Image (cartoon, rainbow, N blue to C red):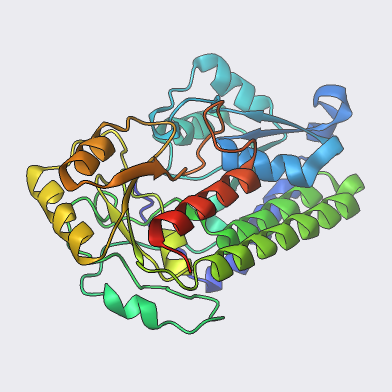
Length: 337
């Protein structure tokens, strides 16, 4: 599950360039073989599917490996899906998020593969103790506002996504998601040079929208009564860092894992100390632990969606709508002024 390597910023340009070079090789033949003459893109799960659709628009046919309502971490790939992967012109995935996808990509023999983890910088969250309070001092406007603000206390059980690896949930930070969008745009341009101008225009448009969303979050969470939120799934480390908040996860990266009694007691103390009003759960996983903690502490419950998939229960029909619902729910829980 854990992404085992930290990608240094210096490697970013090289990784994008290498990916782009690899994608050039089969561009002509691959595109010609796709359905309706469109570039065939297979995306491992919703955030990458959304990016491909927004940038490719009418020039691409995007298939998602993770169907709506399926928890991405639990995805199993059929032999038929592995075979279909091999027929794609471009495959977009996030290495180490979904072990079954990693295996299928390796077996498929597909040439044009883009690993989103190489398009931005991944970080470990909660691995460093003692970073709780200083996160609040980050300057407004600092591109890395809240960076390394860490969690409330990094040595809490369940806090560090299961060990020393880095956190894969980069799409929940609009700034990092925009970096991924740029990399995907460059990959589509190389794979289908005939429509490169459109891909570039659509990428710029998406990056602009993500910039606006970043500003909404920055302004909306600037002044709040509390800076701490409790969630069942420790998926919001990047979002917390970006906006100077403290994430307290009941469980680690696996939303179904059971927290220990000690962890639940610890969270009760945190809730009291930091004026926490709400325990967040998500739409694709059980809300049992959130409701148990809320009952024990007299807190409310609400939804904070890690956007790993869109279903009928989602508070919105796409990435932007759900992220704005997340913002509204955070503002309410944190007491935005």
